[in-house]
Image 1: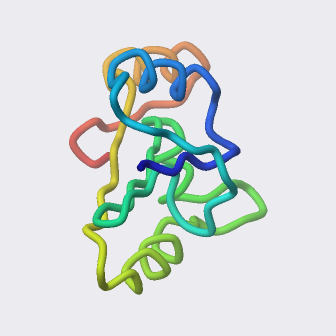
Image 2: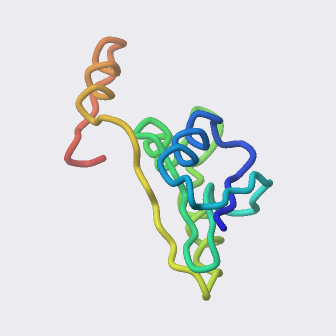
Image 3: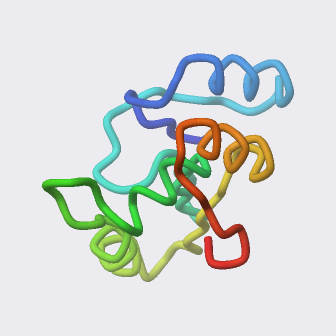
Length: 106
């Protein structure tokens, strides 16, 4: 059984169901993470979300450290941060709007 956070885009659940037809998935509101099994807790972040989670936005500080601290309390589970997306595309898109991203730093 894999629990999927109800705030995750439906396209990811559809992909998982199609790719792993023998696995049972249940959508629910998870307190931490985006995907969870009995042994693993996964936080999925796009490249853009990772950057904003680290740096924050104009009026909010970054939330990544607090997320990781909460996830680290799950002693019986392996915690995984899964980063999705394409770094080259993200940096090119940001460059188009005048923001330079150092891929090595991110």
